[in-house]
Image (cartoon, rainbow, N blue to C red; front, side, top):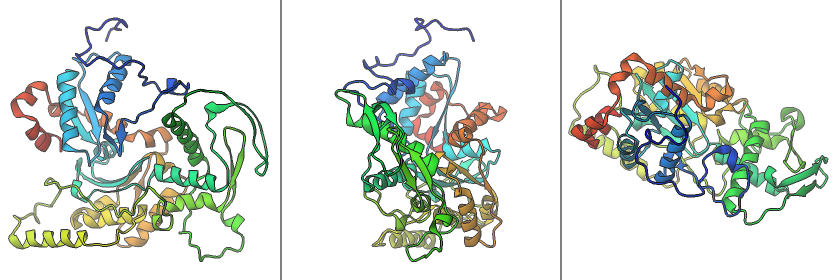
Length: 430
């Protein structure tokens, strides 16, 4: 494809004019600007600000010098995406951007194809959400998808509360002009930069960046649950200490606490904090495309419908929601799938997401699953490369859209007009 001049707008679709003073480059965000608000586009993996999303897509496509009318678009979505959002993305891609072809693919499906395992149990531990999704022949079983908020943000909140309890402060890097290295018990010696009118959203974003580095450096998952009653002969030997230098040169030492942070993903009931309600991860998604082996498939009877209603009613009558950590969430997802495919999924469990990179997490999960399912052959699959683990859905989407048989799945604007949104969402984007 030939290069397109910066002022050539012939390839651009008719998109509403961009709001002034809006930035989408990650590099420009690191330079503080007075009264600059940072607004997230996604929440729990779902687009919540469509105006900003469209502007960001246009920014990305223009920087890629993409010819909108020559390149089809594949968009990944979480299993719990709403019908309204799916409809919106379909209309924006085909009507506003005028892409010749469009397809919506579920994140777990893309992850499974990234590792060449179209049938798998995908355990995705991200920033907002931890989810477990069975995938059979590339199709997500929505009714047995479990999700909780015990993920990266949950860990960040615990870290922030722990540092506050030490009577210390997380100073973001942009505020530091100069610093002198100090010992853990000494006061930090640093000179701040002076800024005016810095918004809370910008400050929170920069603090979160520091907490992210802290998570990647000090957290480790213990092989056994940590309980208050357990006594240790030498706690420093069982829980080796590790230090972290904050941007203002203040050094904090973490011992047992850094293992407790990792343990909280598996035992959230022992680490309750404000802002994170008890969650069992019970599926709330209704779908009629879940897999049932043909030899066992049958037309539902009145007794079957009554049994399903009783199950739902019983689930709804629980007075106290039950906590489910990562191992229990994964075990429960396995128990919900049909017995004929359970062994296959147990042998193909994919662990993905940025928060899954915590040392010791895979070992603890494997040990717990073997203990909970002694009759199954459990096998975990996780990319060793950090970038692959974080962006596995993108890699899988690239693999999926490159398949020769995928060409027939693209949806065009003409098909949208002829068939309609309802039918496309129910039959084509499953």
